[in-house]
Length: 84
Image (cartoon, rainbow, N blue to C red; front, side, top):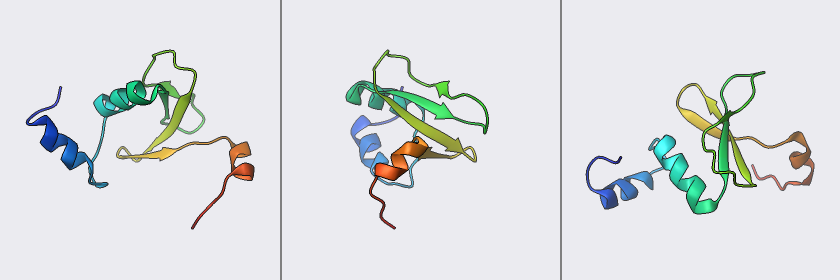
């Protein structure tokens, strides 16, 4: 459920300062055919946010109650290009 005009809502989401939640994550899962798992606490297993039985997964870490970061296996760093 989205309050207000949907097109205005989509324009608003283009701003990187805007927050998203489970509604948007579920939409992305279906669009990109990838389930989302979220790590919320150190040492605890990830929580399945979507469960569509897609083969590919997006792993995120939810920090400080307001921010998502990407999570990659340590082996990924050896083969990834990094820019800073």
